[in-house]
Each structure stands twice: as structure tokens, then as C-alpha cells.
Length: 399
Image 1 (cartoon, one colour):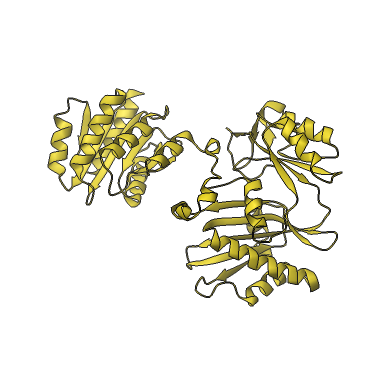
Image 2 (tube, rainbow, N blue to C red):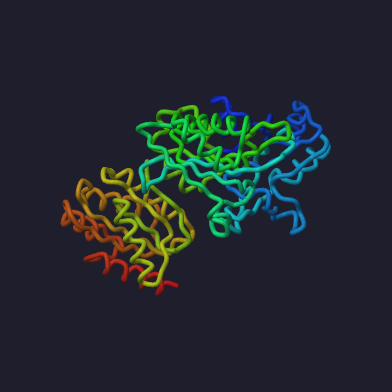
């Protein structure tokens, strides 16, 4: 789960981490009022969307010469003008794709006198099973660009969760940022605080870009992004309450309500599978046959009829879907349960696209009988290869 910048800074502040003063706003009036609560005279107005590259982004409605989603303002009147232009309009960044994201929230912060900019991030390193701290002197830039053009300027420090953050980790961070004296001590303290926040909040990623050295000799988190392990949110109701469903795909939101693993993709063949590995293989074989999957959808191993019905409806709610491939290997999941859910959903939504179903495993014959006796135009398949060929052929024929 992702949250907005202003929410992330609220969480970091609870761990004693220094962030600029700021206030969120959902209207022009609130933005002006937020500026009034800050000392000024310089303000920063930031679009709040779940995507990076906001500063270099462009608003669809404002033309190519318009300013991006992070703007300086030297007065409350300028804050008002920026808020009028940004709220309700669509910001397109390198991470949003051409569709962009509508800006519904702003964050008005105090201006900062910046001496230097740095990069610092924490994430879970799956290869080592440790927490990785990524550090670079090239703050303010895309870390992907830095990795491509000057990889020697990136330092990775891995921290074993069994021992936790140790003093030498902090010293390594300060050394990588080329800091000395009091700034080096401040960097060591900040690194520890960020690690503690990362672990305590069950983060999946915590990125500070830029981390800035101010002209008065301090370190300040100027911008941050945070994402969380969804499976651990039950431990953090305060974090879960920060979820902004307007930033998510409506179908993914609906899927989460039924505990379905669903991700929308750009193809036209909907997939319903049990098991993440089998789902990946199903998508691969669809592409191997010359088509593209419209989604990743894993109903899990313990799905019931209601869950399967919900999954089917979610797939069909995507107007891009021109055909559906159901691929079930019944272990814990019973094929007759899947079949009942498919039939119920197909009848309820008035199925009007080709449907190919491949069943194998527990209660497979019972499941095939349910489909065959349903009276619905369901195309059976003997194996995964046969299923992929049939659904691709049906979609191409319909087109």
C-alpha cells in the first residue's frame, strides 16, 4: 500500500525525523490557509499523487509550457494561483503513463534554503533477505538514471534484521554521503531513525529524495515516498486508515475487498487462476501465442463460490477484456467449486465474450460436468497449451 508524501512525513516526524513544516489541502481556500500557518516568505506547493517525477511532470489541461506538480511561491497569492491550476487537473509524469493522475490534494510546505541534496532509501533486498539502505550523493535525480550513468555514486549497505542497525551502518552512510563533523553525526542518527521507522511500520520501501543539507548546517527530509507490506497492515490500523482509494485502480480496490490478488494489465484476455506461479505461467503462454493478458488474478487456494463469482465480475468489468481464460489446478481448491462460481457469475453478468476453461485436479470431473450442463457457451480445454491456443483464436476471430 502506498501513501501520500504529507502522510509519510507525518509518520516520520513521530520518529523524531526532521521534516519541513507543511499542511495538506483539498481546496484552493485550504491551500491559502495552509500558507498562512507557515512563516514564509517562500512556500512550496506540491501535487499529491502516488507517483514520482512530479516536479518534471506536465498538466494535460495546461499545455506544454505549464509548470509541473512541484512549484515555488513567494506569496499567499501565488499559492492561490498554483492551487487553482493544479487541483482537479491531470498530472502526467514519467511514472503515471500517458493517462496521468488527477490531482485531488496539495501539500503546502515551508521553503528551505538548500546547500546540498542527497539520496537515501530503504527497501527489502529479496536476494539477501536483509534490509538494504541505498545511499547516493546524487539527490534530486532519478536513482535509475544515476544507476545507469554513474553507478559508482551509489552505495548499498545491507542490514541483517537479526542484529538490527549497528553504529558501523551509520558511519557507512555518512561516509557514502561524504559528510564530516556534526553533519556526519546527524546522518548517522537519521539513518538509525529511518531504519527504526522502516521496521516498526512494516515498510516495503522508504525513499528520501532529496535529503537536503540546509544552509544552517542541518539535515532535512525534503521529499519522501513510503509503501507498506499489505500483509502486515492488520498491525497498523492507523497506517491502513491513510489509504487513498482514489489513487488506485477501481478494479484493484474491489478485488482487495474480496481478498483477491489482482493487477490490471494492458492486454485483452482476462485471466483467472489459482496460485501466483500458475498465474504467471498462464500470462506467459498467452503472450507466447501472440496475445496479451488483461490482468493478473490469483483467487488463492481456499476460494469459495462467492469469491470466484466476485473475481469473474471484476474481470468482466474491464472494457478491454475480449475473452477470458480460466486455468485452475485443484489441490486445496476444488474444481467443482470453481465451476459453480463461473456458472453463477456468467449468468449474473450476461457473458458476451469467449470463455475457455481448463480444470485439473481435485473434483475435476464434477467441475467439468457442471460446466457442460450449464447451458452456457463455455469452451473446455484439456491442458494449458490447448487453453491458450483456443482463447487466442476465439478473440482473434471475434475481432
